[in-house]
Amino acid sequence: MSGYLTTHVLDTARGCPAAGLKIDLYRIEGETRTRLKSLSTNADGRTDEQILPAAEFRTGVYELVFHAGAYLDASGTPAEDPRFLDVVPIRFGMSEPSHYHVPLLLSPFGYSTYRGS
Image (cartoon, rainbow, N blue to C red; front, side, top):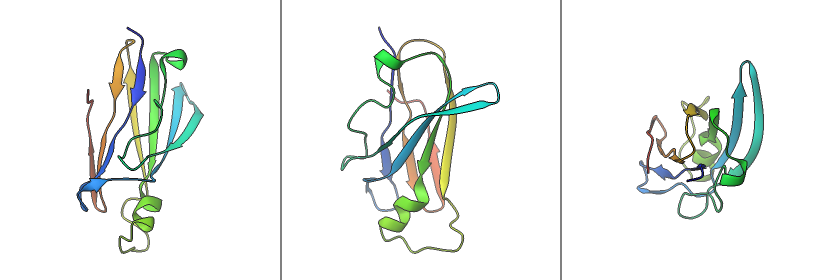
């Protein structure tokens, strides 16, 4: 089985997928943080392609950066200055070639994540 990475972002305050949320993927090697790609979520709160497809998969430490503040602004969530949540980084390890799914449950004042399936 080849490894790959996916996500699903749900807006728990509005009870819907978080469409149009920008996500950056970084690979972490020691003190070096390298941006691999940027994607946005579709109407279902997922990316149109795997974030890290099997052909590009390598074990190691990665970081997904969810641009929550821009999404909340675009969705009409009343803004405070500064926003409580703006950029949400999630750093995680992938130790074997399998499917890694890192969902984000998001609201203006909190978030949750886990290793999904």
